[in-house]
Length: 169
Image 1 (cartoon, helix red, strand yellow):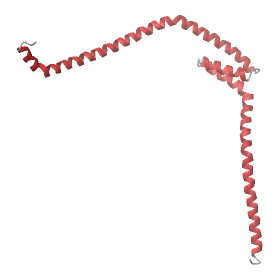
Image 2 (tube, rainbow, N blue to C red; image 1 turned 180 degrees about the horizontal axis):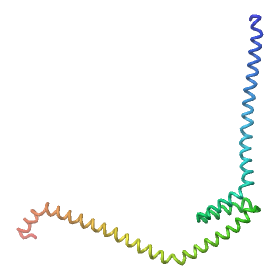
Image 3 (cartoon, helix red, strand yellow; image 1 turned 180 degrees about the vertical axis):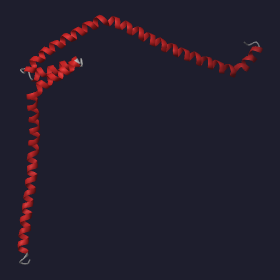
Image 4 (spheres, rainbow, N blue to C red; image 1 turned 60 degrees about the vertical axis):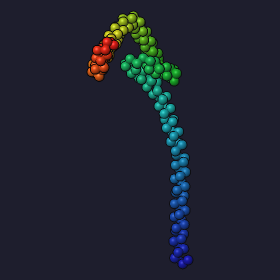
């Protein structure tokens, strides 16, 4: 080792030590930051649910009502009542739930009154379709039978004539 190698060696050692420390610092920071980011995301989601969850569930229920999907609307409102029972949205949701129940009851009554007539019309149209299908099948079978009989006659007529001439037929 020469005299000029000493400062280079020390400089290399110092740079290696610094670089190693920097790598350790980066790895430790990454290891410590990842769980914190995950926890932060979970807490942000919970905070969002607490702040806006009731309003979101009520809006969702209203959208379902608008599309006449009353079962889904009731489900959203039940979630609202379970998760945010004391919110102003829950109070409004209870009114909406009562309206939904009234609407569903009215629809059920209208259906009960109309179902016999609807069933009768359905039976008539279904029977007509089944008859038309059966007629088409019957016509196909009769056409196939006529064709089969014609081809069988051509194949067998000489034999049948001989039997006829002998008096066997």
